[in-house]
Length: 393
Image (cartoon, rainbow, N blue to C red; front, side):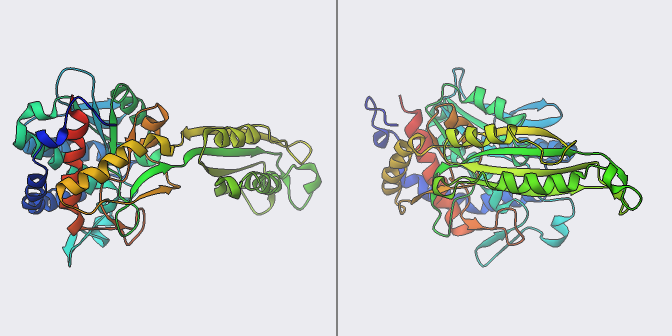
């Protein structure tokens, strides 16, 4: 989104942003180590709260402003607003991770040969730290007035669906010109994410009737067999031509080896490029009918995140390309990806959204998770330029 009444290039010293970010890199690496060294698995709300508390202290130390701590249903989130009006630009972060306690013992923070490792290094603690330092760089150039209208959000449940974080984020971004999502970039070259599939998450519970598997199996209704029928039916809802995936994932059932199981369940992960496709699959799952006489089906869950459609990112991506030249770095590429983020919510609400502005590396949710430190300063400079561009009146 451009603002013809103002020329951002005359307001911001773009080349200075790159040198400022490069001078800040040692401090950014120290801050990334600090964030990684507090384990914050999403399921442990006390651990997430500890991580949020320390990150709030870090923000205060770097920006001279203290974020609000917002706890919703036990989940801790942070919000820092500059100025008194509605947010014009929202930086979207999370500090919960998928990694269980004890991961640091196996994969401690390290920075060797230009590679940062540790749980959350790629997804997405590096991006969260970049948010803070990009803001600090703008304050250094123009004081706090330079970031009037900026809001930084750091949620605590993104990895498990953002059930409490999403309403907070959507409210904050409701009148924003831009949402910049600090999730990791795509691929080795650090492509920005200009479209994401929407997601649905289901648990399908099959109810049968127990009986003795040896004495009178015919009196039972086998929930496990019903599950096998329904798993095949659900998997068949995928549409590769439309880019729609429907994947049964976790499944369980039964009690003992000599009992016809009365209960079974399986989870389903759905990804689609359009809201219409998400709705088609949702309708079909809710219309499932049992195959075995006496069996019943219970559907839990539903559509979680709307698609982040390309149209919501294209104008911001064009600005990123132009500002990259002004900053003095290579222009990023743009890609469409299957994974979802909190950017799906802002884009779904009609807020221009650009994703993947965080770390460049690989291994989200995997043992080889890492970020390449050579990209941190240039991308922090680009982020600062984008923020200033969208805050310009």
